[in-house]
Length: 295
Image (tube, rainbow, N blue to C red; front, side, top):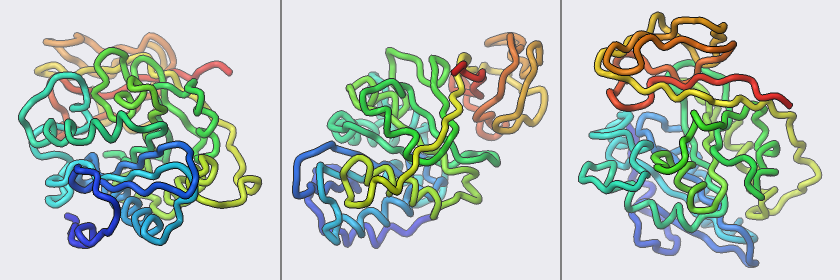
């Protein structure tokens, strides 16, 4: 549970969107958006947004525009992943009346006016920190190695085109570069490290001043997410799979009589975002299956 009282004291230009702020720099440049708390129990992004707001009020934005926002406000207050629906499944085209769909529609104008999105999350199960992006080949994609996290998930199974339900996919469809930063296990996020990663990215993008020559890009391992497994009515994993667990070709991942039938890997792969039974939602992503992308 997060107390948001300090966010109510922020003195920055109004955006007409609750819990969203912007700060233009002294020179023209890119518009970069940092989003935290899309899942209310993933507080690492909330902490980083708070840190960035302080820098914005101190006049640290030098070039372009920095926008920051909190995602699912009520879920943040209650310390829950979501209240009615997963907010990070609500950025697609349909408009609904749940708390999360209303919030997604509030945030959409902000996301449409974004050159680069950094959406900060934590994983449900223990995991190393990594990046996800539906469009790393974007003209600004060269920023990715400078974020300092060497693992990138992309591919059709990460974010299918046509109905961009995730925040990064929505930004990608609008023409910007969508990036999700997974800060590791939500119960033990590497807040200070991710904070530095984001600061370095903002320096490289020109938002903050800094010595760019001292920020070293990492060699990236890219994973092609080729299968987004959707849970049917009686979906059940065959074991308690973990993030980045290797699954050889022919492995039975799950049974799903009303949906996929037997979920079996067609090639040597890894499993990502495997949901616990309590977090499985019929019709939503149960896990992602990915293969190592050739160099």
